[in-house]
Amino acid sequence: MQYFIKTFEASLKRCWDKPALDEFRTSSITYGQLAADIEEIHLYFRAAGLVKGDKIAINAKSSANWAKTFMAAVSGGYVAVELFPGYTPHDTQALVNHSDSRILFTEKQIYKDMHFEEMPQILGVIDMHSGELLDSRNGFDQIYNNRAAAFSQAHPEGLKPEDVSYIDRDMDEMCGIMYTSGSTGFPKGVMLTVRNFSANVDLIPNHFSYIEGENYVSVLPYAHIFGLTFDMITPLCRGMHLVVLFVPPVPTNLKPALREFRPRVFFAVPLILRKMIDDSIGEFVNSKTGRAKLADYENNPEFCEALRIIFMTAMGGNIEVFVTGGAAIPDYIEQLLAVKLKTPFVTGYGMTECAPTISLGHIGAYKLKSVGEYVSEHIDVRIDSVSPARIAGEVLVKGDCVFPGYYKNQEATDSVFTEDGWFKTGDLGTIDRDNTLFLVGRSKSMILSSNGQNIYPEEIEVVLNNMPFVAESLIVSRKEKLVALVVLDQNALGDAGTDAENLDQIMASNLEALNKIVPAYSAVSSYELRLEPFAKTPKGSIKRFLYQ
Image (cartoon, rainbow, N blue to C red; front, side, top):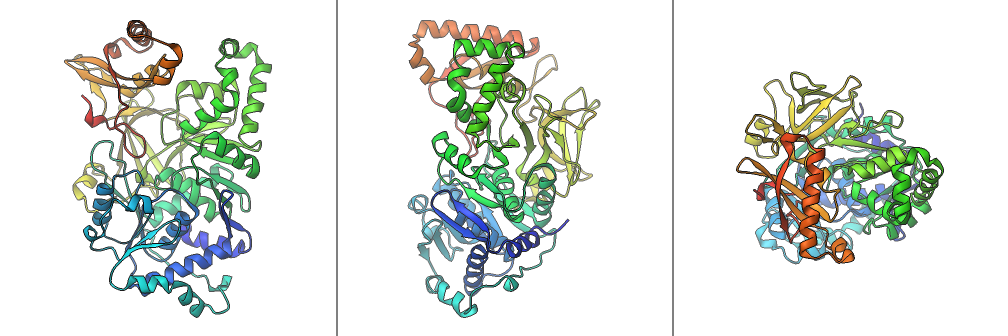
């Protein structure tokens, strides 16, 4: 297994004059230009007195400059600190200070509500998009403003491939800190090592077509580990042409990018796929005739093939596999894409603490409701259960992908590792003889019924969320009974002209239908309507700890 920055360095040299980084229809640079930009960053970091191991905080939306800054930090011997731009200014400042960061790359709009004097270790604050220096101390402004001249002095004839030689780092050296989304409380800083990223960069191309020189359309947030590793680090390490969408990945923005660059592999969260389905084939899927034909899909192959062609054309027309992760896939989307339309669709499973890969689905072997087979190259997986194939237990993992612990939080670190070194994911699941993993819920959200049954609220919520007028739901236990907290789909209510009396009947029917599907011990006794969406983490997970 090669150190991933050396893999990146080799790609830089091989692909020097080839396109490296685009912001869709905005900017484009070659690998040689990317190397020069990284060298300029290294020079002003060193001039400012930064030393190996210093922290560089990145708090911005995904962009070409985001990718450039991250690769500069890790290739220079520093630690890149990834902060989700959805955090509040107060929380962002707290995490900047907690991480001991020395430089903060952010956005002017985010920074306007932050206070420089409350981040005393920061030398400079830089707008990620314009490069404007927003605040500085200790003479950093002179160094930063002189960066172009410093580069010219160091490389009067320009940077050449033979000039690029990145620092060697120990495989177990920390090179990243990513703060978790905090669905159970305040975010924890996941320390990620050279080994963690190198293992992922090594294994991912064994499963998906990351081919040098080909186009890769990137839509996922780099402040989330799924996007950082699959959508940015690996394409650049493999010498691909990385096209960052940069604008929201709604169909009006995404379809032109997919059509122009025709990627072979595409990664997305379920919400993006749902919007692409609605935009391309929604009128057919949602019509009365279409629903009937899809319900009887085996006897309507021509209709399904027509929908498949329309959808795959909307996805660029060259997709060999599209992969979803980062959130549970709704059952109706999985059924539509994998079974009825037979598109090249799979899911995967990972965690920030594994940078992120634990399991990946494969075309031809994908099983419904699974998260693929665990990746044997750099991961061992076992289920903490007396019968791992039949009785759900906590998913435990060990291997090169697994992080060493949480930054400055030994108590939290000790709580997630077994005495013999297995990482406790907090997810509950089973695994079959083919090493296919099936998840049923989170151990922290599991409800133990009065008769000793384990109830997994996520399994109930997936069913309820697919019922009429339900936007999202949360199952809680009250006085030993299950109650559904329901946020209504206001758009659907408005379109249907539903009044309060009809809504009561609809929700009663929903509960009746739900309780016929779930096991008797998981029956929901009542519901409670909520006017506001549930509070969520920046990643989009519901903050369950706020609701009882």
